[in-house]
Length: 144
Length: 124
Image (cartoon, rainbow over all chains, first blue to last red; front, side, top):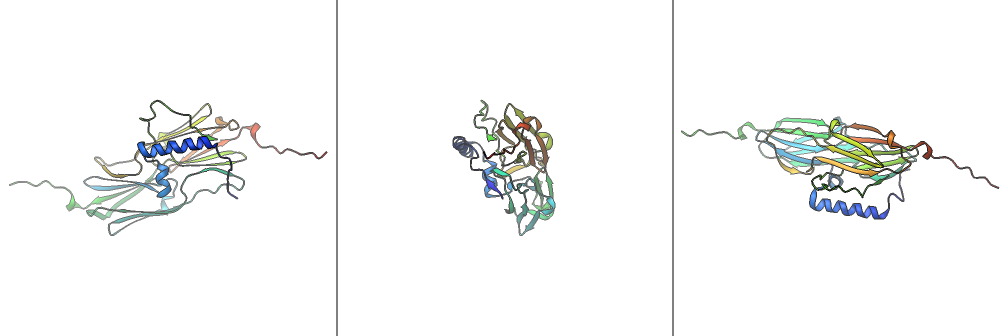
């Protein structure tokens, strides 16, 4: 049976931690935890004149089980993250990592070429590179 | 094992880092800690134990095409950092680490003397 420890940490340090996290959330940086809770995997999107780049932070996943699809200008990344279940007599002190099925959807720009997609998984990050259509790339026009 | 709240470095602000999500599980032999450090290559992962403080640090290294402009970033910092305080019964000199696909697994055994022993209760 999995159960939480009744006395994981003392209350004061817990409060301290909460306060610190809130401050972090307000001023400094989006905590990866805040993101991971709501939506896994966390995503970064960027682009160049030639391509659109999507980074999905999905550590600990067998890339073969990832389902990446582009349909009507929408990219979907779906899969399931299975974590090792704790042993029968184990106590779970902290349980923050995402587990279970996930699905995230990103709207792509209009000028992408859905046939020129590359996806790589490295160090727990899925990188999807989608080329922009040739005719959409900037061109210099000569003035006569 | 508890999270260290007393750690404050003077340059903590410049040093802004993401807090990686972790799972901490304890059984009779010791503590297992899993941390999600997506985007950190093996050579950018730094683990150190100093006194009773265990620090996990990693730098994110993503392949980016030249001139890429970010339009949406949920992972807005390129560093992870989290510090834990180890309790006395843990043997910090025997920490085992595995790192694969952005997931760190640390095994921290309990010191020999702290292994559970069954206490016999004698009925007088």
